[in-house]
Amino acid sequence: MTPTKAPGATRYLPEERGLDSLRSAAECCRGCPLFADATQTVFGRGHPGAPIMLVGEQPGDQEDRAGEPFVGPAGRLLARALEDAGIDPALTYETNAVKHFKFTRKGGKRRIHQKPGRTEVVACRPWLIAEIEAVRPQVVVCLGATAAQSLLGADFRVSTQRGRELRLPASVVDIEPEPTVVATVHPSAVLRDRSDGREEAYRLFVDDLRGAGSNL
Ligand code: URA
Ligand code: SF4
Image 1 (cartoon, rainbow, N blue to C red):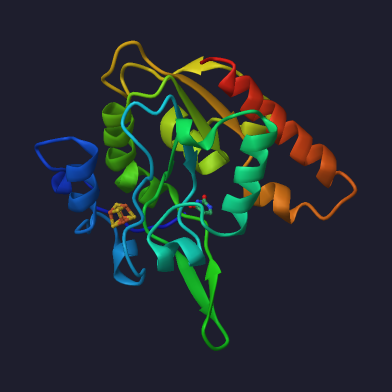
Image 2: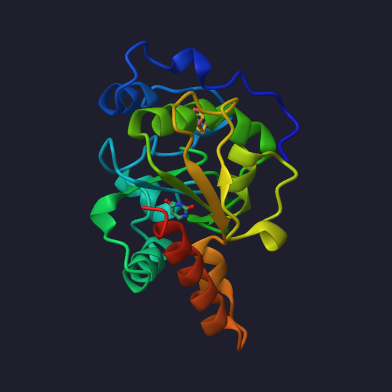
């Protein structure tokens, strides 16, 4: 958790809420301190009307440099899992709960990922909500606890509620019909699983994605 308060992204949202306007306005966001050390804002990728929105945690080292979500190792695992789940990547919009990379430096130059705190997640949520309202997906898939807690509240537990189909409350997004929302693990958690259970973790991840895709 970050102890400091952050003013939040709301004041940076443009009046016109199309994806292109949102993307360019987000480049200038200073709604929390994370903009200061990251290379750039990493906004979502995909088209308005994409039926599945995938929400990760925050850009990683490679995404921070490239300016695009899910281009690193977690993104490669996600792409393979989508394929195994029978989901055409062209149907997805991929984004993150937090749009700037949070890291610490270890030793020389290596940048080590740090989990965003609740303050940053809440500060950045207006971008995520605006993306959902602009894309109007049928299903939102939260990849890991950060995304799930951003949209479903800090008490949400992926371990007990993964795969369960919920409705995104009208208090969160102002669109009708409210999209279905499903949470699963983060692809990095599958990558990090060094145990014998890794295959099983991958299989369960694919099952959750397939279940989410069956809503289309
Ligand atoms: N992990 C995420 O949550 N998002 C990315 O874009 C890359 C890695
Ligand atoms: Fe703005 Fe989000 Fe970046 Fe913080 S992380 S500066 S709220 S875009």
